[in-house]
Structure formats: structure tokens, C-alpha cells
Amino acid sequence: MKWTDTLEIAIALADVHPDADPQRVNFVELMQWVMALPEFDDNPKHCGERILEAIQAAWIDEV
Image (cartoon, rainbow, N blue to C red):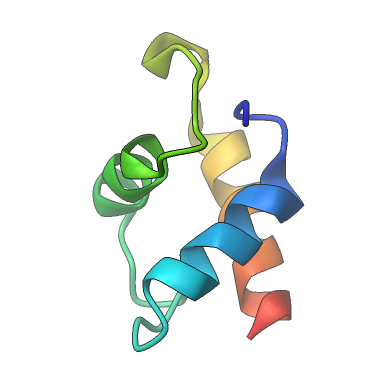
């Protein structure tokens, strides 16, 4: 998974953190959680606020 795989990341986060409210996860924590996903393999420098917002929005839609 890369940063641009927002829906795939959102699905994985929903599976790994089923009790988390995606609206309450701050971007620092969200970035750490994404990078901790076993399938994730991308450079942290390629991440920005827009990508994190897209991941968070997809996650909200997923739950």
C-alpha cells in the first residue's frame, strides 16, 4: 500500500482499530497508524495533510 491507496488504507484501519472513532484521531496518530500497517510500504515524506484528510474521510465513510 502507498499513501495514495486511501480507500485500502481506510479499510485496513477500520479492521485494525475497530473501536477508534476516525473523527477523533489526530493526523499525527493517523500517520503513525498508517505506517504501522503491515501492508503499508511508502515514504513518510510523501504524506501530507491532504492525503491524511482523504484517508480520514474514507475511513469515516467505511464505518
